[in-house]
Each structure stands twice: as C-alpha cells, then as structure tokens.
Image (tube, rainbow, N blue to C red; front, side, top):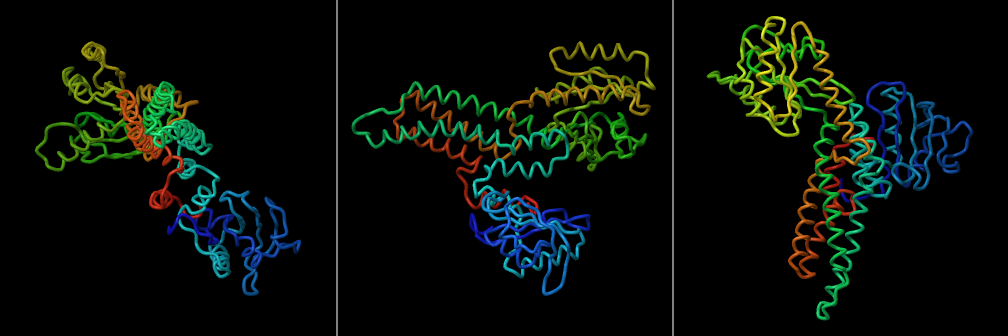
Amino acid sequence: MNGLYTSDTIVALATATGAGAIGVIRLSGNEAIAIADTIFKAHHAKPLAELATHTVHLGMIEAEGHQIDECLATVFKGQRSYTGEPVVEFSCHGSSYIIAQVMKSCLAKGARLAEAGEFTKRAFLNGKMALSQAEAVADLIASDSEASHRVALQQMRGGFASEIETLRGELLNFASLIELELDFAEEDVAFADRDSFKALLSHIKQTITQLVASFSVGNVLKNGMPVAIVGKPNAGKSTLLNALLNEERAIVSDIAGTTRDTIEEVLHIGGIAFRFIDTAGIRETHDAIEAIGVQRAKEKIAKAQIVIFLYNQHDDTVADVVAFVKEHYREGVFFVLVHNKIDLYTEGVDTFDEQVRCALVGYNITLLTLSAKERVYLEELKQSLTNYAQQINKAAAGNTVVTNLRHYEALQQALTAVERVEEGLASGLSADLLAIDIRETLYYLGSITGAVSNDEVLGNIFSKFCIGK
C-alpha cells in the first residue's frame, strides 16, 4: 500500500469467491454513494444520495443499458460505517458472472480494486478501532475453534487496547512532567514526584509482566494445542492417532520405524483445537532418513504443550520411562505417560506403573493405561485432555490474554524499557536520561494500539488480511 491513506473509492467482493446464494460487493470512499447511484436504480426511484443512512433498498443494477441483476443496496453515510467513510454494499445473486459485471461497472465509474485488508485499514486510520482491534478482525475470520473465536472476539471489543492505552496515558502524564524538568534544568526543579513515579512504574511493570505471561495461554487458544505423541518404534503411536481421529490417518505396521516423518492432524476437544503430532519412534539408528525423523520428533517434543509418551512393560523398562521424562520434562507442559498394549500384557502393569510413579516423585505427570488397538480406556485419555483444556479456558476466562506475536514482542520490549527506567530512578539518574527510556516505553506500548505506527508496519499487518475485509 502506498501511503498511510488515500481518498480513492475502493471496491471488492466481501464474501467468499465462487458461486453461492449471494455475493456482497462493498464500495467505500467519498464517492461510493455517487458511483453506486450511476449503476443502481432503486424500485422506488429515489437515488441513494437522498436516502437515510443504514437503510436497505431493492433495485436493479444496470450497465451500458443492460440489466445485470436485481439486488439489495445497503447505504452507510458519513462516518457511521465500518470504514468510517461512506459505504454502499450490494447484495447480489452469487453468480460469478454477475459479480464480475458489477465489479467491472464500479471500476468503470471511478472506483479501484481494494487491496488486502484495506477496508479494515481505513477503519483504523479513521479512528473506528485501535490497531490491535483491527488485527483481531483477521484472527476472528481465521478462528476455527470455540476458544480461538472467543479470544479474537474479546480482542476485537477493545479490552486489551483499552488496558494498554490506560497504561500509556498514565505514563505519558509523568513523561510530560519529566520533559518539563528538562526546560528548567538550571533551576534544579522537580515537577514529577519520584515516589509516585516509582509506584506507577511498579504497577505498569506488574501489568505488562502478567500480559507477557498470558501469551503462553493465548497462543494455545489461538493456534491450537500442540500434542506430541512419542515413544519407541512400534509403541503404538500411529495406532493411537488413528484411534483419536477415528480414521486410518497414519500407516500402521508391525515393522519398526514405519513412521519416518511427523504427521499432524487437528481434533477439537473441550472447545480447543488439539494439534496431534505422530512422530517417528525414538531410538538410536544408523539409517540416515530415520535419524532425521528421530531428530524431528525431539524438536516436536521441545515445542509441544502436551507430551503423550507411549510405553509398555514388554519393550520398555522402568528406567527407560524415567530417563525419557527426566530428559524432556519442562514445567508448564502437560506430561501424560500411557502404558499401552494392555490387551497383550495385563499382569504386572500396576506394579510397573507404581515403580514409575515412585521414581518420578516431584514431577507433575499423569499416568494412564490404554490399548490403542482395541480402544480400551481411550475415553479416559480424551477426558484427561478435556480436563487440561478446561484448565486453560479457566485461566483465560475474564482475563486479558495476549494472542498476537507482534504484541507479545512489543510488550517484552516495553517491559525491558520500564525496568531501565526503574533502575535509573533508583540510581538517581538525571531527567534527560530517564526521558530516553520513558519515550521508548511509550513507543512500544503505542505500537500495539497504533498510537505509534508507520506505513511499513501497517502494510505488513494488513497484507495478511483477505481482500474485501
């Protein structure tokens, strides 16, 4: 996009491409209503320019003397629209030919094709929403689970933006006083009460720290829960994946090392998308291809929010299970140890698992038994995952959670700058040096809501939107 804003009138298909019952074509810009009046004739014969805002009218779209379609035209006048400028939306029949002809007619009368995200970009530039709210629009469109939909809707309503703006406003007041001291440096006058400033910095630091910490939850809600299914070759990983999905997704064989790469599938449990990852069997191997698969399996373990480790008393020892946990265990990761193949090996299972439990005292793990092949106790595993999902949902309920990587990185930068201000204040740093770090904090907080922005950042953000939104 060239420049932060242009006065062009833009047009795009706002609904999905392809044949459908209806197709909505959106015009936005100062000339939107005038352009619409040149091609749309309402059955009541009144031009759209003379009609009230937020009204819908039935009529015919015509071009070069030919009727194209009978459709509805919705009028939004002044700033009372999604974009904050005059908008007309045509709800036409969803024929690809009709859509193409209506678009062609709009372009012939002076509109231009909208770029990706340009309608939402105009909404931001016209003050209809903060930048973080605009980004939440894209997240809402992309949401594919109850949890991702909920957090995107919460962001779009502006709670997060309001919280950031409140922090920024409080800091800005003190920043003004600090800057004022620079004008009276020779008089050695202090306008900003240092004790009050310390208290404010402590509050800002605590709030930002909580927001940064919430990203681990927010990222899961938005993108889904990565679940690594791991174990030795022939532990039953692919069989478990197939059982969870209730379809033959992965190849199952008695030959060890069948899975050479990772296989990923999504299953929705408890309103959260679980991204199950079937990995190559972990073992020492001289096969170059299998070795790559083993390495990828370990990488998936390192990134997973849930690790399901399959073992059985015939192929594994207690020491094997304990060694795996101690090598890969991370705080905050849900570790599930699953004693598989109990349809084959029944006696001694409880004794084996009790020894594992005793050897891993102090580790937050869940032990389950299962037969992936016969799907015995499969529901217990699903329930365990559901319970964990409910914990994640409970942690997010009623709280502001960060789901956007750009926001997370900006908050980290802001937190670092706040800590420098605190250190400078404690060491009696002069106002001019304090002001540098205060300005940096304000910059990073402002970059989240769009109070501070540039064309390159906006172009990158809105280029990820679909055209028509």
